[in-house]
Image 1 (spheres, rainbow, N blue to C red):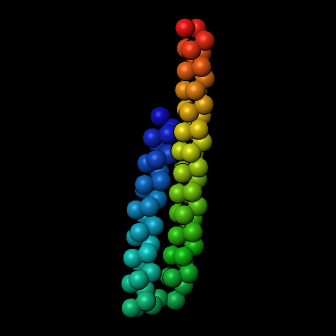
Image 2 (image 1 turned 45 degrees about the vertical axis):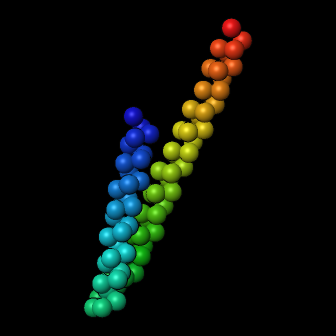
Image 3 (image 1 turned 135 degrees about the vertical axis):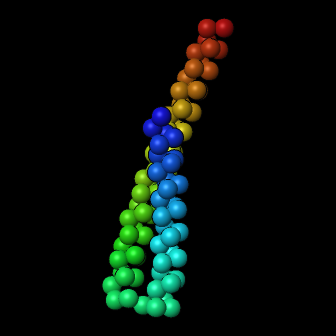
Length: 79
């Protein structure tokens, strides 16, 4: 479902972010004007995406915990 898709997006973004860090490392050895600035901006975008995916996961976990608690309460009341 959507939770799995959000997790996959987060993992993919982490992979891309690692590639950008590698690119920044390589750029130190052989700088190309503007390449590092572009990589840093893309890295910021990836981090923003990772944050969004983690927030979605957190909200989903909270909703599931609340639903589970509600169902447990109902089960106790119904005996």
